[in-house]
Image (cartoon, rainbow, N blue to C red; front, side, top):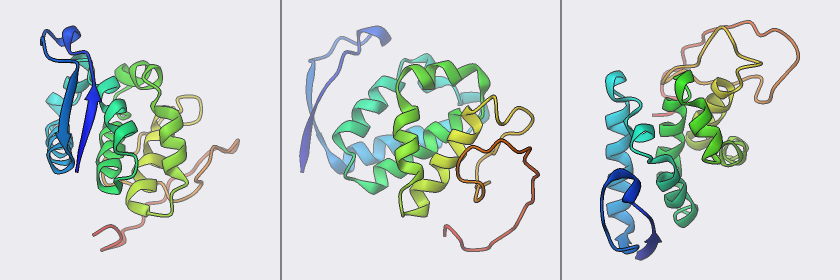
Length: 160
C-alpha cells in the first residue's frame, strides 16, 4: 500500500523530486523514529527548527485513516506542546484543529495525547503547569472557567 506525497524540502536544503511514493510501514517507522528522537529533551525542537511540522501535517492528511500513525503524530505534537517556544509554530501549522478532532476520538491512545497537547497549548487556561509525557488529562476534557486543581492518579496498564 503506497501513497504519493507532494513536498518541498528546499527550506531544509534538500533538493528532491516533488512527488515521492512511500510505503505505509516505512512512513510509520519514520514517524516513530521522529517521536523517539523528540523524546530526548535536548532534541525536542529539532523537527520545528527543520521545518518539519508542515511535513508532518502532510503525513497526517495522507494517513488520517491509520490510527497508529495518528497516535504517533499526536504524541509528537504533545511532546512539542511542553515547550512554549514552539507554540506559535504548532498553531501556525494547523495542528490545533486536528488535535481537537483527535481529542474526541474513542481510542484513548489517540485522544489522551491530543487532549494533553491542547491543554498545554492553552496558555490562557494552563499557565502554571504542563502535562508532561505519560501524564494524561482525564478531566476536564474541555476548557473550563474554573481554576484547576491537580490530582495524580496512578493507573497501571491504562495504556499498555
